[in-house]
Structures are given as C-alpha cells and as structure tokens.
Image (spheres, rainbow, N blue to C red):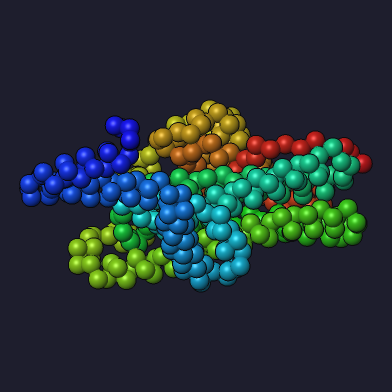
Length: 379
C-alpha cells in the first residue's frame, strides 16, 4: 500500500486524536463547532430566498401602515374615491434612525396639493393645445383667456399654500391661526374654477356648438381640481379637530397667550397701529386726477411700484373720480392704496359684457395677473 494513501492518513489522524489530552480535545471540538456555525450563518445570509422573504415582510408591513394612514386621511372628505386615487402613488418615507415608516399629516397634505398642481398643469397644457390658433368670437376669446388666467392663478395659490405649509412646522402643534392662511389660499384656488365656468355661462345666449365645446372642456378639466382642493380642505379641518383636542389636554399649550384681536395675520403690530394713525401716514407717491400729484392715473402708479417689496409701499389717491379699471399684478406685494374717503376718492370702471368684456374682466379693481398667453384667429 502506498505511504500517502487515504487508509494510512486516517489511521495517523486517529492515533493523533488518541494521543491528545482532554483539554486539547475540548479546544478542537469548540473550534469545529464555531467553524460550522460561521459556515451556516454565511449560507443563511447569502441565501436570496431568505433575504427576499424578509424584504417582502417589511414591504408588506409598510404598505399596510401606508394604506391605514391614507384611509384615515380620506375618511371625512367629500370625494373619498378621488382622495384614495390622489394618494395612491404617495411614496412611503422611511426614517434612517429606526427604519420605521413616518407619514405625517403635512407630508400627506403636501403630496395631495402637489398632485392637484400636476392636474392644473395638465389642464393648462391641454387647453393651450386645444384652443390656440383657433377661430373664436371676441366674447369666446375673452372667456377662454379668463379661464386660462384662473388656471394660472390657481397654480400660483397652490404653490403659495405649499410654501405656507413649510413655514409652519408641524411640530409646533395646534394654534388658532395655524392653518388660517393655508385655508384662505386653498379656498381661493378652488373658487377660480367656478369663476371660469360662470364666465362661460354668461355666453350661453350664443347657443353655439363651439360655445358648448369650450364649456364642456373646462367643466371636465376643472371639476376634479375643485374636488381635489375640497379634499385638502377637509383634511385640514380634521387635523384642526385633532390638534384642538391635543391642546386641551396639554396644560403648557393652554397657558400660551394667543392674540384675540381678530386682525389679519400678515399685519405686524406696527402696521396695525399705523392703520389707526389718521392723517399722519405719509404715502410714497401721490395720484391726483387734476395733475397735482406724481401720477394722474392709479394704474400708472401701480405699474411703477416696486415688485415683490418686503416693506409696505403706500400710494395716496387724492379726491376725484378715476375712470379706469385697476389691475394689481400679484408681483406688487405689500402695496397699500390710501384714498381721501369713500365718498371722495372714486374709481369708476365701466366695462360690461355688452361691450365685449367678460364678467371677470369687467371688475373695477382686481388683483392678479396671468403669465400664459394664447394666440387666436379672429372670425
């Protein structure tokens, strides 16, 4: 038999084991067991089926929590089915600290508002594609432009709502004014759609197929937008109830001094006092229809006022009748118009639907401006 054959090697190994004492044998056995455990652990960790199973379990738990939160958020909305559809694609945020799903009210609300913005943008694009370079009467053109302006204003107000949501941290808790401005912005955004449809209804006397086509397009596009905003407002109302209950149970919050003056949030204490200083406030520029001021038209003074001003810019308007329709673009922030009294300073716009103006465009004083333009072909 060969010297290095398996039989001889096994015999030598057996003799080596017999010559070892008890302590040495225990060490050998321990090392063998530890090696076996390490091999088994490595096999389990590298097993795709095991890893995949664990991953699926975590994902299932996360989806269950997500669905539960969405169901709670949509519970008291007027358009529940639409609410579920709106939130169905919401990504599940995960905290890196404990790998737990963190789905706050602000996170859900912001996602819902962003989904509404997306729908508004799609409506803007489809409307431009549908109505641009088409032949419409002047009244129809005005109505379409009004609707496009309303869509642009809705987009702007939804963006402002998200900005306001970021400025008010959810961790602060409930305060009486917490969601006040946010609700104002969303309510204004929702009514824009109604203004568009109302303007189109004014033209029903035309009774043309083109008129019906325009109205149907905007009704189909704007109704879901108004409903999505309505759902957002319902979510806020529910959250306010929850926060109010939390406040009642929190002695520290109850001790906080909340102003009860009922004045506008955006006015500082200094500005509120300024409003009460009759005759002592000096305007930055003067408008006078007799030519004795810096401008003779209110529109001229507004056009040359600073854009996005951080401080109050006051325009004094002397007594007189100003026959103009005043439009204040939304970039003219912190603008104040100061007249000489309700029976002294009079703005008298005279636009009307008979002269070809829509109801919306006939406003004597309005505060917005569109950044979307359409090209029309005249009939």
